Amino acid sequence: MSRVRAFEIFTADMTSWWPTAHHIGSAPIAEIVVEPRVGGRWFTRHEDGTETSTGRVAVWDPPGRLVVTWQIGADWRYHDDLVTSVEVRFLEEAPARTRVVLEHRDLEGFGEHAEAMRDTFEQPGAWTATLDAYAVAAGKAS
Image 1 (cartoon, helix red, strand yellow):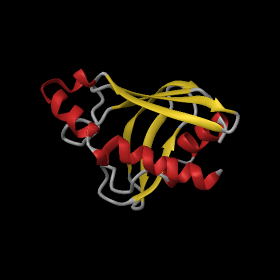
Image 2 (cartoon, rainbow, N blue to C red):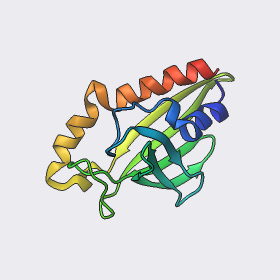
Image 3 (cartoon, rainbow, N blue to C red):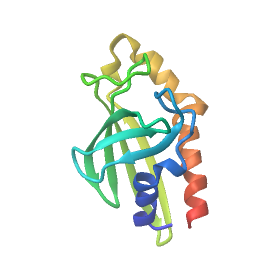
C-alpha cells in the first residue's frame, strides 16, 4: 500500500480499525476524528452524542508523518495540562509497501505514574494490538 493510502487510513478512517474497547467515554464509539491540520482535535464521538478528547494534532505532514498529543492520564481521563506525544511515521519500503512506525514519547509527563503507563503501553493489548488492528484494516483496503 502506498504511503498516501496508509496515512489516509490511519487518519481519516481511524474508526474502522481503532479497538472498540479503547476509549474513555461512557457510550460505545460512533466515530474517531483526527482533524487534518496542525491544532486540529483528536477526539471520539460516542453513540450517545457525547465527545471525549484524546489530544491535538501537533504535526500534520502527509503522507510521511503525524504527531498527535495524548492527553489521557493514568486515571483514563482527558487532562488539558498533560501532554505526551504519539509520533507516527509512514516509511516507503517499496512502491506499494509502507512500514508504519509509532512511538509514544514524553511519558515523563505522567509524573509518578510514568513507569506504570510505560508498562501499560508496552502490553500486547495496547499499542501493539492497535497497530495490528490498523494493519488488518489497511490490508482489507488495499
